[in-house]
Length: 264
Image 1 (cartoon, one colour):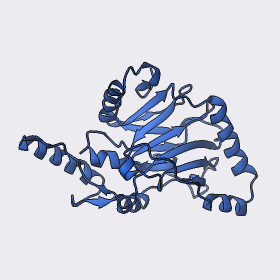
Image 2: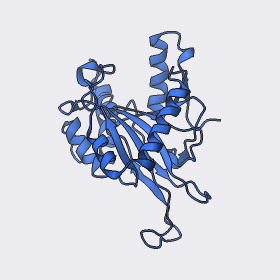
Image 3: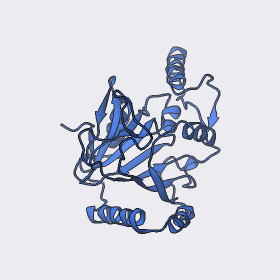
């Protein structure tokens, strides 16, 4: 059984039904596999081949030059008023092979982490994995870390902090991490390709509650949102902008991924 729920676009009879499916997976975990998405395996495989060539063959100076080049903004598709494409990011990620004790000996209880525990600060993330993906992505679920292995022809989708803010936590931005798969010898490089959908810098992140005559319901939603916000390190519920939140989150994200060829 897959670690995450699967949303199959072929089985969506209407936009309303698709919305219900997305709400269901979004409010329970915030991570899911998307299949029948229409992106060919040939195109995805070609992108991974390009990524491997880029990291394994291009000189550092060339990589820096490509990393600083930005593409044209994409047409708005999600919440158009606040997603003009200015901050969307398409990235090629490379996690180098693990060298034991490269940073000094570790304790027996210490886990080897490639990307530290975090939630994504944007609105939505689409993650492309290789069929040969060695694993390592884990999602926090019911008090434990759950592996998210490769599923054939699937894109891993996860809700970001912005959607969690706007929906007063009806949609969940779940914490996750990338570890070194246990028992792997020798540890290999890991490649992944994420696309980050991110709100414009000036967009305010605060609950957008529908009009209601039920004050108790409104208060309950705000209280629940307050609990989640405090878990993410916010002592005050004063609204923040997408830029302010991004800078705070970036300061807390660890890991050893090499990020390059960023386009928007």
